[in-house]
Length: 371
Ligand SMILES: Cc1ncc(COP(=O)(O)O)c(C=O)c1O
Image (cartoon, rainbow, N blue to C red; front, side, top):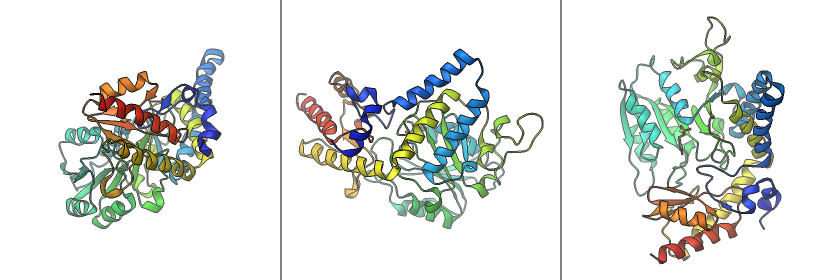
Protein backbone atom coordinates (compact mmCIF):
# COMPACT_ATOMS: atom_id res chain seq x y z
CA UNK A 1 0.00 0.00 0.00
CA UNK A 2 1.20 3.58 -0.66
CA UNK A 3 2.87 5.32 2.31
CA UNK A 4 0.26 7.92 3.33
CA UNK A 5 -2.74 5.55 3.33
CA UNK A 6 -0.60 3.01 5.17
CA UNK A 7 0.25 5.59 7.85
CA UNK A 8 -3.14 7.22 8.27
CA UNK A 9 -6.01 4.96 7.19
CA UNK A 10 -6.44 3.64 10.73
CA UNK A 11 -7.70 7.11 11.73
CA UNK A 12 -10.72 6.85 9.39
CA UNK A 13 -13.28 4.21 10.45
CA UNK A 14 -15.38 4.48 7.26
CA UNK A 15 -12.46 3.64 4.95
CA UNK A 16 -12.24 0.22 6.58
CA UNK A 17 -15.54 -0.80 4.95
CA UNK A 18 -16.12 1.76 2.18
CA UNK A 19 -14.22 3.42 -0.63
CA UNK A 20 -14.55 7.08 0.26
CA UNK A 21 -14.15 9.20 -2.87
CA UNK A 22 -16.36 12.20 -2.20
CA UNK A 23 -13.82 14.66 -0.76
CA UNK A 24 -15.06 17.31 -3.22
CA UNK A 25 -18.29 17.19 -1.20
CA UNK A 26 -17.61 15.68 2.24
CA UNK A 27 -14.40 13.88 3.18
CA UNK A 28 -14.22 10.90 5.56
CA UNK A 29 -14.39 11.72 9.26
CA UNK A 30 -11.10 11.16 11.11
CA UNK A 31 -11.11 9.91 14.69
CA UNK A 32 -9.36 13.03 16.09
CA UNK A 33 -12.07 15.15 14.44
CA UNK A 34 -14.81 12.92 15.82
CA UNK A 35 -13.21 13.21 19.27
CA UNK A 36 -13.14 17.02 18.98
CA UNK A 37 -16.87 17.04 18.14
CA UNK A 38 -17.47 14.77 21.13
CA UNK A 39 -15.39 17.08 23.36
CA UNK A 40 -17.61 20.02 22.41
CA UNK A 41 -20.71 17.99 23.17
CA UNK A 42 -19.30 16.64 26.45
CA UNK A 43 -18.18 20.04 27.66
CA UNK A 44 -21.80 21.22 27.46
CA UNK A 45 -23.28 17.99 28.75
CA UNK A 46 -20.98 17.62 31.74
CA UNK A 47 -19.56 21.06 32.52
CA UNK A 48 -22.41 23.28 31.43
CA UNK A 49 -20.28 26.04 29.97
CA UNK A 50 -17.46 26.12 27.46
CA UNK A 51 -17.31 29.71 26.15
CA UNK A 52 -13.65 30.44 26.94
CA UNK A 53 -12.54 27.07 25.66
CA UNK A 54 -14.61 27.58 22.48
CA UNK A 55 -12.99 30.99 21.89
CA UNK A 56 -9.54 29.36 22.33
CA UNK A 57 -10.49 26.68 19.80
CA UNK A 58 -11.60 29.39 17.38
CA UNK A 59 -8.12 30.91 17.61
CA UNK A 60 -6.51 27.48 17.11
CA UNK A 61 -8.60 26.89 13.98
CA UNK A 62 -7.68 30.37 12.70
CA UNK A 63 -3.97 29.74 13.32
CA UNK A 64 -4.05 26.34 11.62
CA UNK A 65 -5.82 27.68 8.52
CA UNK A 66 -3.39 30.64 8.36
CA UNK A 67 -0.53 28.14 8.41
CA UNK A 68 -2.19 26.04 5.69
CA UNK A 69 -2.31 28.95 3.23
CA UNK A 70 0.78 30.94 4.30
CA UNK A 71 -1.13 33.82 5.91
CA UNK A 72 -1.04 35.54 9.30
CA UNK A 73 -3.82 34.73 11.81
CA UNK A 74 -5.04 38.36 11.75
CA UNK A 75 -5.71 37.97 8.05
CA UNK A 76 -8.30 35.23 8.66
CA UNK A 77 -12.02 35.70 9.49
CA UNK A 78 -14.21 32.85 10.72
CA UNK A 79 -17.47 32.86 8.74
CA UNK A 80 -20.39 30.40 8.35
CA UNK A 81 -19.90 29.48 4.67
CA UNK A 82 -18.07 30.47 1.50
CA UNK A 83 -21.25 32.18 0.29
CA UNK A 84 -21.33 34.26 3.49
CA UNK A 85 -17.66 35.14 2.95
CA UNK A 86 -18.35 36.56 -0.51
CA UNK A 87 -21.50 38.37 0.65
CA UNK A 88 -19.42 40.08 3.35
CA UNK A 89 -16.78 40.99 0.77
CA UNK A 90 -19.47 42.42 -1.55
CA UNK A 91 -20.85 44.44 1.37
CA UNK A 92 -17.41 45.97 1.90
CA UNK A 93 -17.07 47.36 -1.64
CA UNK A 94 -19.95 49.84 -1.67
CA UNK A 95 -17.67 52.78 -0.83
CA UNK A 96 -15.42 51.98 -3.80
CA UNK A 97 -16.37 53.97 -6.93
CA UNK A 98 -15.65 51.19 -9.45
CA UNK A 99 -18.75 49.06 -10.08
CA UNK A 100 -17.60 46.33 -12.45
CA UNK A 101 -17.18 42.73 -11.24
CA UNK A 102 -15.76 39.78 -13.16
CA UNK A 103 -16.39 36.12 -12.37
CA UNK A 104 -16.17 32.95 -14.42
CA UNK A 105 -18.37 30.23 -15.83
CA UNK A 106 -16.44 27.77 -13.66
CA UNK A 107 -17.36 29.50 -10.42
CA UNK A 108 -19.75 27.69 -8.09
CA UNK A 109 -23.33 28.92 -8.82
CA UNK A 110 -23.49 30.81 -5.50
CA UNK A 111 -21.00 33.35 -6.91
CA UNK A 112 -23.39 34.25 -9.71
CA UNK A 113 -26.37 34.33 -7.31
CA UNK A 114 -24.54 36.77 -5.06
CA UNK A 115 -23.60 39.16 -7.89
CA UNK A 116 -27.08 38.94 -9.46
CA UNK A 117 -28.43 40.21 -6.15
CA UNK A 118 -26.03 43.21 -6.09
CA UNK A 119 -27.95 45.41 -8.50
CA UNK A 120 -25.41 48.27 -8.25
CA UNK A 121 -22.77 46.26 -10.11
CA UNK A 122 -22.15 45.47 -13.80
CA UNK A 123 -20.89 41.96 -14.17
CA UNK A 124 -18.87 40.18 -16.86
CA UNK A 125 -18.76 36.41 -16.87
CA UNK A 126 -15.69 34.77 -18.43
CA UNK A 127 -16.88 31.77 -20.47
CA UNK A 128 -14.91 28.54 -20.41
CA UNK A 129 -13.43 27.27 -23.67
CA UNK A 130 -13.05 23.48 -23.95
CA UNK A 131 -13.13 23.15 -20.18
CA UNK A 132 -10.51 25.86 -19.60
CA UNK A 133 -10.36 29.56 -18.78
CA UNK A 134 -7.46 30.82 -20.94
CA UNK A 135 -5.50 33.69 -19.38
CA UNK A 136 -6.19 35.89 -22.46
CA UNK A 137 -9.84 35.92 -21.40
CA UNK A 138 -8.86 37.49 -18.08
CA UNK A 139 -6.77 40.04 -19.97
CA UNK A 140 -9.77 41.15 -22.02
CA UNK A 141 -12.56 40.90 -19.41
CA UNK A 142 -10.79 42.69 -16.54
CA UNK A 143 -10.59 46.43 -17.15
CA UNK A 144 -9.43 49.49 -15.21
CA UNK A 145 -13.04 49.73 -13.98
CA UNK A 146 -13.07 46.24 -12.42
CA UNK A 147 -13.28 46.41 -8.66
CA UNK A 148 -13.21 42.65 -8.01
CA UNK A 149 -12.40 39.49 -9.96
CA UNK A 150 -13.75 36.20 -8.54
CA UNK A 151 -12.15 32.95 -9.63
CA UNK A 152 -12.30 29.35 -8.48
CA UNK A 153 -8.93 27.68 -7.81
CA UNK A 154 -10.37 24.29 -8.86
CA UNK A 155 -13.56 23.86 -10.89
CA UNK A 156 -16.17 22.19 -8.64
CA UNK A 157 -17.44 19.89 -11.41
CA UNK A 158 -14.59 19.03 -13.77
CA UNK A 159 -11.60 19.59 -11.47
CA UNK A 160 -9.74 22.01 -13.80
CA UNK A 161 -6.95 23.71 -11.76
CA UNK A 162 -6.28 27.38 -12.47
CA UNK A 163 -2.93 29.18 -12.36
CA UNK A 164 -3.84 31.62 -9.60
CA UNK A 165 -0.42 33.30 -9.56
CA UNK A 166 -0.76 34.19 -13.24
CA UNK A 167 -4.33 35.47 -12.74
CA UNK A 168 -3.21 37.53 -9.73
CA UNK A 169 -0.52 39.19 -11.86
CA UNK A 170 -3.25 40.30 -14.31
CA UNK A 171 -5.66 41.58 -11.65
CA UNK A 172 -2.85 43.49 -9.96
CA UNK A 173 -1.79 45.13 -13.24
CA UNK A 174 -5.39 46.14 -13.98
CA UNK A 175 -6.03 47.42 -10.44
CA UNK A 176 -8.73 44.87 -9.57
CA UNK A 177 -8.94 42.99 -6.27
CA UNK A 178 -8.83 39.19 -6.56
CA UNK A 179 -11.15 36.83 -4.64
CA UNK A 180 -10.20 33.14 -4.90
CA UNK A 181 -12.74 30.43 -4.07
CA UNK A 182 -10.49 27.69 -2.75
CA UNK A 183 -13.21 25.38 -1.45
CA UNK A 184 -12.20 22.67 -3.96
CA UNK A 185 -8.46 23.02 -3.34
CA UNK A 186 -7.72 23.90 0.31
CA UNK A 187 -6.71 20.72 2.12
CA UNK A 188 -5.18 18.88 -0.83
CA UNK A 189 -3.39 21.46 -3.01
CA UNK A 190 -0.70 23.68 -1.42
CA UNK A 191 -1.68 27.36 -1.43
CA UNK A 192 0.61 30.32 -0.73
CA UNK A 193 -1.45 33.51 -0.62
CA UNK A 194 1.60 35.78 -0.30
CA UNK A 195 3.71 34.16 -2.99
CA UNK A 196 0.74 34.06 -5.38
CA UNK A 197 -0.41 37.64 -4.64
CA UNK A 198 -3.96 36.80 -3.56
CA UNK A 199 -6.08 39.59 -2.02
CA UNK A 200 -8.92 37.47 -0.67
CA UNK A 201 -9.57 33.74 -0.45
CA UNK A 202 -12.37 31.65 1.04
CA UNK A 203 -12.74 27.95 1.80
CA UNK A 204 -15.16 25.92 3.90
CA UNK A 205 -14.18 23.02 6.11
CA UNK A 206 -16.27 20.03 5.05
CA UNK A 207 -14.60 19.06 1.78
CA UNK A 208 -10.85 18.38 1.63
CA UNK A 209 -10.28 20.09 4.99
CA UNK A 210 -11.72 17.05 6.82
CA UNK A 211 -14.28 19.05 8.85
CA UNK A 212 -18.06 19.36 8.96
CA UNK A 213 -20.50 22.01 7.62
CA UNK A 214 -21.19 25.29 9.38
CA UNK A 215 -17.85 26.98 8.99
CA UNK A 216 -15.55 28.61 6.46
CA UNK A 217 -12.50 30.86 6.50
CA UNK A 218 -12.05 34.15 4.71
CA UNK A 219 -8.50 35.40 4.11
CA UNK A 220 -8.14 39.13 3.42
CA UNK A 221 -4.66 40.59 2.88
CA UNK A 222 -3.84 42.70 5.97
CA UNK A 223 -3.37 46.12 4.35
CA UNK A 224 -6.47 45.64 2.21
CA UNK A 225 -8.67 44.47 5.10
CA UNK A 226 -7.96 47.65 7.05
CA UNK A 227 -9.17 49.77 4.13
CA UNK A 228 -12.52 47.97 3.79
CA UNK A 229 -15.61 48.52 5.91
CA UNK A 230 -18.02 45.59 5.48
CA UNK A 231 -21.66 46.57 5.91
CA UNK A 232 -22.36 42.98 6.91
CA UNK A 233 -20.69 43.46 10.26
CA UNK A 234 -21.56 42.91 13.91
CA UNK A 235 -20.02 42.23 17.29
CA UNK A 236 -17.55 39.49 16.29
CA UNK A 237 -16.13 41.93 13.74
CA UNK A 238 -15.58 44.76 16.22
CA UNK A 239 -12.60 45.82 18.33
CA UNK A 240 -14.82 45.51 21.39
CA UNK A 241 -17.92 43.40 20.86
CA UNK A 242 -19.82 45.21 23.63
CA UNK A 243 -20.93 48.81 23.18
CA UNK A 244 -20.14 51.22 20.37
CA UNK A 245 -16.83 50.27 18.83
CA UNK A 246 -14.77 50.47 15.67
CA UNK A 247 -14.04 47.73 13.17
CA UNK A 248 -11.58 45.09 14.38
CA UNK A 249 -8.08 45.23 12.88
CA UNK A 250 -7.44 43.01 9.87
CA UNK A 251 -9.75 40.33 8.51
CA UNK A 252 -11.59 39.87 11.82
CA UNK A 253 -13.79 42.81 10.78
CA UNK A 254 -15.45 40.42 8.28
CA UNK A 255 -16.83 38.31 11.13
CA UNK A 256 -20.41 38.78 12.18
CA UNK A 257 -21.76 36.66 15.05
CA UNK A 258 -20.97 33.62 17.20
CA UNK A 259 -19.28 30.91 15.14
CA UNK A 260 -20.73 27.38 14.93
CA UNK A 261 -18.41 26.20 17.71
CA UNK A 262 -19.02 22.51 17.10
CA UNK A 263 -17.65 22.98 13.56
CA UNK A 264 -14.81 25.08 14.97
CA UNK A 265 -13.72 22.21 17.26
CA UNK A 266 -13.83 19.84 14.29
CA UNK A 267 -11.86 22.27 12.10
CA UNK A 268 -9.13 22.86 14.69
CA UNK A 269 -8.50 19.10 14.97
CA UNK A 270 -8.82 18.47 11.23
CA UNK A 271 -6.46 21.27 10.19
CA UNK A 272 -3.91 20.30 12.82
CA UNK A 273 -3.85 16.80 11.27
CA UNK A 274 -3.47 18.19 7.74
CA UNK A 275 -0.67 20.54 8.79
CA UNK A 276 1.12 17.74 10.63
CA UNK A 277 1.12 15.57 7.52
CA UNK A 278 2.07 18.52 5.30
CA UNK A 279 0.40 19.79 2.16
CA UNK A 280 3.14 18.86 -0.26
CA UNK A 281 3.12 15.19 0.85
CA UNK A 282 -0.66 15.14 0.52
CA UNK A 283 -0.51 16.73 -2.92
CA UNK A 284 2.19 14.35 -4.17
CA UNK A 285 0.13 11.34 -3.11
CA UNK A 286 -3.18 12.57 -4.55
CA UNK A 287 -1.51 13.63 -7.80
CA UNK A 288 -0.11 10.13 -8.29
CA UNK A 289 -3.48 8.52 -7.47
CA UNK A 290 -5.33 10.83 -9.89
CA UNK A 291 -2.79 10.32 -12.70
CA UNK A 292 -3.13 6.56 -12.37
CA UNK A 293 -6.94 6.72 -12.22
CA UNK A 294 -7.23 9.03 -15.25
CA UNK A 295 -5.09 6.72 -17.32
CA UNK A 296 -6.98 3.63 -16.11
CA UNK A 297 -10.38 5.24 -16.78
CA UNK A 298 -9.29 6.12 -20.33
CA UNK A 299 -8.10 2.54 -20.88
CA UNK A 300 -11.54 1.34 -19.76
CA UNK A 301 -13.17 3.59 -22.34
CA UNK A 302 -14.59 6.12 -19.85
CA UNK A 303 -14.69 9.79 -20.91
CA UNK A 304 -12.91 12.22 -18.62
CA UNK A 305 -14.50 15.63 -18.17
CA UNK A 306 -11.66 17.64 -16.71
CA UNK A 307 -8.35 17.16 -18.45
CA UNK A 308 -7.96 20.09 -20.87
CA UNK A 309 -4.71 20.38 -22.86
CA UNK A 310 -3.22 17.41 -21.08
CA UNK A 311 -3.42 19.22 -17.71
CA UNK A 312 -3.97 16.92 -14.75
CA UNK A 313 -7.26 17.78 -12.99
CA UNK A 314 -7.80 18.15 -9.22
CA UNK A 315 -10.20 15.19 -9.20
CA UNK A 316 -11.28 12.37 -11.50
CA UNK A 317 -14.42 13.57 -13.23
CA UNK A 318 -16.07 11.08 -15.57
CA UNK A 319 -18.85 11.89 -18.03
CA UNK A 320 -22.10 10.04 -17.36
CA UNK A 321 -25.55 11.27 -18.43
CA UNK A 322 -27.12 9.22 -15.63
CA UNK A 323 -24.66 10.24 -12.91
CA UNK A 324 -27.07 10.16 -9.93
CA UNK A 325 -28.26 6.69 -10.85
CA UNK A 326 -24.67 5.47 -11.23
CA UNK A 327 -23.70 6.99 -7.86
CA UNK A 328 -26.58 5.14 -6.17
CA UNK A 329 -25.41 1.84 -7.77
CA UNK A 330 -21.80 2.52 -6.79
CA UNK A 331 -22.98 3.07 -3.21
CA UNK A 332 -24.36 -0.49 -3.25
CA UNK A 333 -20.83 -1.56 -4.18
CA UNK A 334 -19.50 0.40 -1.17
CA UNK A 335 -18.11 3.24 -3.30
CA UNK A 336 -19.05 6.69 -2.01
CA UNK A 337 -18.64 9.25 -4.80
CA UNK A 338 -20.15 12.64 -5.69
CA UNK A 339 -22.34 12.95 -8.80
CA UNK A 340 -22.88 16.46 -10.22
CA UNK A 341 -24.85 17.28 -13.39
CA UNK A 342 -23.60 14.82 -16.01
CA UNK A 343 -20.41 13.71 -14.28
CA UNK A 344 -19.34 11.29 -11.58
CA UNK A 345 -16.68 12.89 -9.42
CA UNK A 346 -14.14 10.58 -7.81
CA UNK A 347 -12.30 12.88 -5.41
CA UNK A 348 -9.54 11.07 -3.50
CA UNK A 349 -7.74 12.21 -0.36
CA UNK A 350 -4.52 11.09 1.29
CA UNK A 351 -6.23 8.02 2.78
CA UNK A 352 -7.18 6.58 -0.64
CA UNK A 353 -5.12 4.09 -2.63
CA UNK A 354 -4.70 3.64 -6.38
CA UNK A 355 -6.38 0.23 -6.05
CA UNK A 356 -9.49 1.83 -4.58
CA UNK A 357 -9.81 4.19 -7.55
CA UNK A 358 -9.28 1.30 -9.95
CA UNK A 359 -12.00 -0.71 -8.19
CA UNK A 360 -14.45 2.22 -8.49
CA UNK A 361 -13.55 2.67 -12.17
CA UNK A 362 -13.98 -1.06 -12.90
CA UNK A 363 -17.44 -1.01 -11.29
CA UNK A 364 -18.42 2.15 -13.16
CA UNK A 365 -17.20 0.81 -16.51
CA UNK A 366 -19.21 -2.39 -15.96
CA UNK A 367 -22.35 -0.36 -15.14
CA UNK A 368 -22.02 1.90 -18.18
CA UNK A 369 -21.35 -0.95 -20.60
CA UNK A 370 -24.40 -2.86 -19.28
CA UNK A 371 -26.71 0.03 -20.31
C1 LIG B 1 -16.14 25.72 -5.18
C2 LIG B 1 -17.29 25.92 -4.24
N1 LIG B 1 -17.56 27.16 -3.79
C3 LIG B 1 -18.59 27.40 -2.97
C4 LIG B 1 -19.42 26.38 -2.55
C5 LIG B 1 -20.55 26.72 -1.64
O1 LIG B 1 -20.06 26.75 -0.34
P1 LIG B 1 -20.97 27.24 0.89
O2 LIG B 1 -22.13 26.31 0.97
O3 LIG B 1 -20.03 27.12 2.06
O4 LIG B 1 -21.39 28.61 0.63
C6 LIG B 1 -19.17 25.07 -2.97
C7 LIG B 1 -20.04 23.99 -2.51
O5 LIG B 1 -20.02 22.87 -2.94
C8 LIG B 1 -18.09 24.84 -3.85
O6 LIG B 1 -17.82 23.62 -4.33
